[in-house]
Amino acid sequence: MYRVELEDFEGPLDLLLLLINRREVDIFDIPIAQITNEYLTYVQLMESINLDGVADYIYFAALLISIKARMLLPQPEIDTEEEDFDPRQELVDRLLEYIRYKDAAETLNQQLEERSRLFTRGKASTPAEVESPEKEVLVQTTIFELMNALRLVLEEAPEEETITIESQRYSIEDQSERIRRILFTERRVSFRDLVRGQARSFIVVTFLAILEMAYGHEICILNVSDENAFVIEKGELENV
Image 1 (cartoon, rainbow, N blue to C red):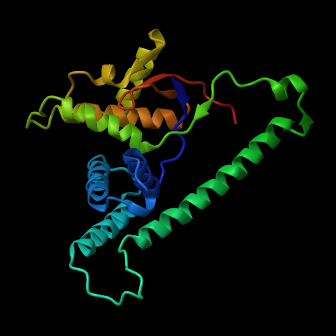
Image 2 (image 1 turned 90 degrees about the vertical axis):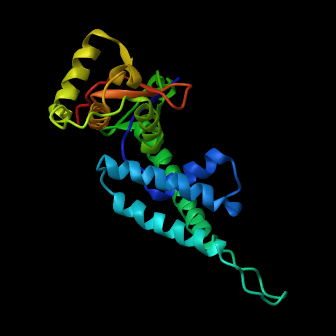
Image 3 (image 1 turned 30 degrees about the vertical axis):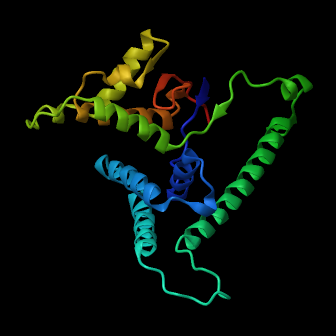
């Protein structure tokens, strides 16, 4: 088990890389049909719960559909001396450029982190402070891994009744308060246990409350060995 702190939502290229890595395929030989279908499933889920930034994902969805369509068309005959044109090349180039950008950003962040460990408010840290490892490593996760857990829970949820009055009772504030009460007595609780047997609208509002509380460092999201499940526990608000 490892601790996860949710900071920023990743972008559409992160989602594409996640889907490609899960299939363990070569980035130069992307199974465009399968990846497109999986990508569209995530975009539709994002739209259904009104997450910000969906427009960026829709743009890449259109690009994937365009590539998929071009690959289905019969290819014109070309001279043997000319290289075959692959409709996926534009996407591959973007992904490779983005990977280089992420690697550079990660290297810079590591350098800044090492520097911050040596100096705090202009005062050098003691050797013990520099050498002592953290109790638990904070690992950044992606929104898509959490959304996958949401999708699976929604599939198991009972059908929502047509009456809309019931769904109007749920609010992020109410669910946040409910989670606080639970974590006051329980060390940690799983997302599945929080929403077990509840309607889909209840599940979605609870999920959004978890994200909001994670952003505020009120809770920590723990990603356990089962990638389709996660648990939460009370966090510590940081004094800035």
